[in-house]
Image 1: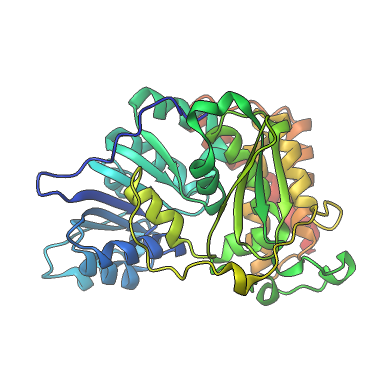
Image 2: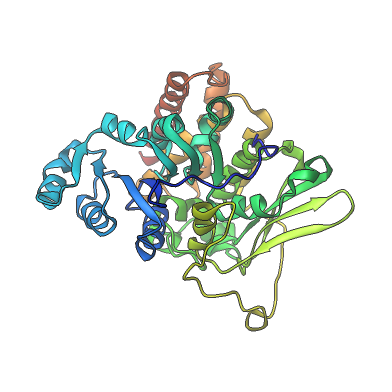
Length: 406
């Protein structure tokens, strides 16, 4: 859990007054929003390293724009393209998973960890070695190895700043002096594109429909997770590691307007909420400036124009992925890691049109069942154990995808 007793010491800056920043997953939606903010205020930031999976063109463009010291692609096949695009710029180019980890371990004041999926676990851990703070947008780091990661952060004295809009909202309204008086933490969910769609109609959902989120602009994987409500389930698991509450104190409500991002209820009956526009640059800006605030190019939330705020209970019958994640949270140990592994495989298979939308939850459920019967659910105590469990979960999920696709 987050050490809320630590004083709010501002993030450090170089002697020139610039804050050293690295962005892991620079070409994704969170990475792009982060770099947009950095590019608007070049005198404030010194970019140490940028990484991406394989999009050499976008990575090189951002690296030049923000004058990064090094740019790294995880896919070695993309190296030649990246090196050619950076030739003559003075920006170092590198490639491969090991190079991503090395870049993550370079000294920085703040590292934004926004790599999608379990691939972000090792770089997120490496960032703890040299960064004063890690702005964590890779939810799989906490889902797969939350206890391990938070323990390592505490050991190294690194501050974890949550980037996800919901966790960032909780971070803003959670009173450090009153954490013992927290009754519950409430995460809001938009309900995704199928909030009012019957389960029968979901059987025919295409990837194109599932990718059209009504409120947020996000990457492909997280958009599908939002459509199944798995994203909210993963966020519950994250919140358990970030904040000093039990699983029973974590709740989800569906809020279609996506104006209220998170709430904390205290034992005296007070309910504190953070509201804002559906723009990731707000929580990112908060992390970049924490514990101060900085202007962000975000349209202010107009409550009069919005008019109405509505809330609903989530439907776990139509969205069983939420129930599966809640069960994994309660079970603990290795269940969240297997849940995440199976979900990544199932989402990939759906996007590739090998399984249907409703099969995503079915694949995850069967994978968890098989892993439990095989006695695989021990909590990872080290990084290699987390990867081994993730690998086994993926193997079981792939078998289930093949069975359903034939």
